[in-house]
Length: 412
Length: 96
Ligand SMILES: [Zn+2]
Image (cartoon, rainbow over all chains, first blue to last red; front, side, top):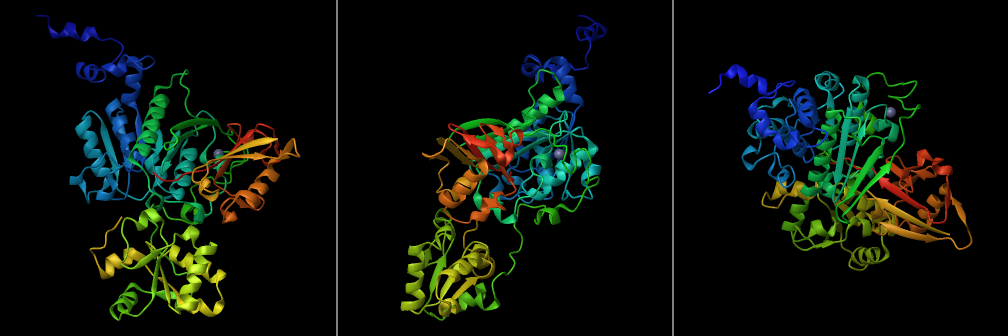
């Protein structure tokens, strides 16, 4: 039996103990990682903005790989509807803050990893102080305002940003603000018009899609930490994944722009701004309250509609959600014409029969009472103005119905 | 001349849900990218032109790629599209 002072000499030039060597063995022997790479991972501090579909795989893979410190920012709590894609949470965590739930899973996976949780909205007031505590930032957020905020904050604090996004069957991933490469603003100097932004809660998203994109983000983070000159970090390039077509494509994007407002030669943004105003949207995926855009006379509340039903007043209920949503659940006796078809000739023909020939009121319905307002406006443009008063939209939509009238209506 | 146009990130929904369109201009052997974009707006777009074109260029939030490279690496909207080019329009995604 040797004495323990000799055992220390088995390992030199690094401080990984036997347990770490055993745990990370497959990773240690991977070309271009090695002991030095593992030491770098152990010393690294990575901030993950968002503990959702992207943030979960990023956090789990980085924790498993032995990143020393993981920070997680998220203000939201776990809901059952998150679990099909947010694989770092569990049924038992329903109602728990997402950052706490994910940190608990990290601890179970690898107790050597330290976590720091920030159960707060990431805003212009908090971003810099949080980011300063880390070396690398991962954008795993779900909204435009946060993406501009994170990118600007990374430029101002000189941190590389590993950015991923996903919707439906598609995902995109790239690295910003790395080695003199472009930032988010170099690529997108002007935010997209709010009406062109589709949220996952409206468009849907698949678990394996965010899984793929989040895994790619974790890998790029490991490459940046590993800092090997041979690493082809995904900067100045954008990887696009179309899961439905099973196609990956990597395209070359512009370099850092001299004219960029935040990272260019003469930056005009030298401190964080109000990104909700800049993007005309919230730091949140949820759409929030829908504002009334149509005239008062064209609005029907769910209570008023319920009274109409009770009094058996004849009417047409026209649901304008996409067909696949209508198939999930619908009110009895409702017709479905998806909003994108509403102003097509045969739809208008049908509506004209209802309002003109049958002289019936037509009530427009959707999930939240947003698109139903668009529907009223589109139809009004296509039918005679003397029938306009027969059109109304149902405010708050089916979610309002479920909340105020019948909680047994399925929510998705 | 023949040009391949590809749409991604949901833009295909505006173009009959087709991700790839092959366009033929029998009387031309080149076409300015600006004209191609306006041609697409006027001939291929099924609805809501403002979701694709604003102020005679693509709206903010769309990346345009010429043969797999950002149009900013070429002449942007002034690029002259040639026979066989592939022009890709990508709407950036924000979800996660
Ligand atoms: Zn920039």
